[in-house]
Length: 285
Image (cartoon, rainbow, N blue to C red; front, side, top):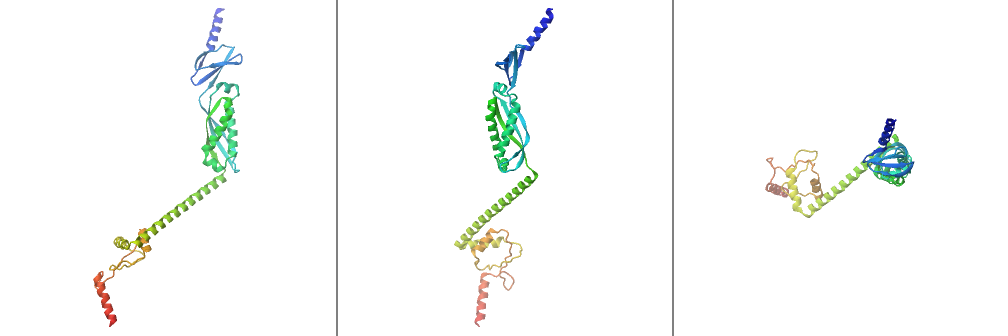
């Protein structure tokens, strides 16, 4: 008779001892009424009369099923997102809402659809983090009454119809071509400025032009489609712009041919003067 009673009492004692982990908060209800919080550790709950509800206070993540939204510029898109949240007020999360996990997920879906409808497709694609931050703030303001805090909402994927993807790809190609044209035109302008500056320097300094001419005669080698003949005995009578062009273009390919004498050798200044005098005497006769 006493043995069965002893086992019943032992079972009641075992059932009255409850453990609350560090990441949990226990709520005690006595005859259905909330009567206090039980902190991490060992707590006693009276069987039959009392009940304990354990709330996990760690951050949780829940995937939001992909849903179709219509942007401000009437483009249909499928958005897949994830929400991170935690319980900061266990009492509110238990007493104010039946299932806070489902509630926060459904609220995030509604807010995401509303904010996407106020955003253009370009902003949705290019400023994804800013859009997600707006969604998080709006959800946070609503679920605070349930004792919840939204840590983060991230837009994992945005899927567009095939036709819209092709349009975006063409737009990206056109943008790259536009950037190429702009960069090329800027390079042409810079090259023209350098060309004009080189021409100005050569015009103001004849000595610099002569020095450049001698350097060009020394460095230009090879054969090409064009041929330039310089008179080695005289200063170069070259327009500064032409010399500047030679300075700017390293690809110029010319062959320099000096004036030859009767023996087939380059004619010196003295030989040229003698030849000119002889020609003048013959003309006088």
